[in-house]
Image (tube, rainbow, N blue to C red; front, top):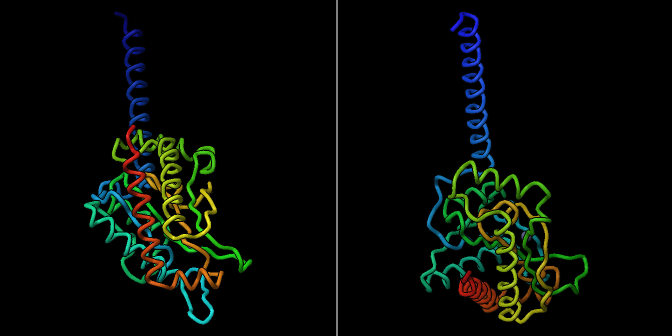
Length: 259
Ligand SMILES: [Zn+2]
């Protein structure tokens, strides 16, 4: 073998080592980036269902009720607590993103949901509605389809999932389909138990329903801007019916989960 040929081989080896180092460094950076996009997976808890009582603390949510003032943040927390009691009585493990009247940002809610719940846990964000039109009334449930969550977002989630391993929950496209199925189960049960008009299942992009790792929906339990519905939402009996409706929706979702 000539000296020149050995030099060529050495340079080739050097280039290969440099290229491999670049690939390893790039993969490391991608993993780090994915960890930032999908935080707290290592802390994933055991809850099968995570309830997210909307608003809280310095954020009262929608206000209404006329003579009986109603703050959305109180109604959502009470309905969530009642729902948790019902589900736990059936042996279903439940976590909450807030247990009391405190201010919690959306990103912190996501971190908490991942801390208390499994990666594939059902996430139900509980809210009340508000409209300029005081006659607006009824129940609606929102989910985020793959199309609605943005062209690239489900793909980015899928890449992050591939980089970080399997504890990231459902495949983003399967998750979107499951979220819609969960929304249908909840909407049907809630409208029936609450005996309020059924405004249907709706597709829209919300922070939590877009970024959750399992099936995720947002339920609007009625309009605080409608005096009659606000009076109902202020009553314990109605809140209990809402909780029973959500629990029934979760049961229906789980029992039809036979793929
Ligand atoms: Zn709200």
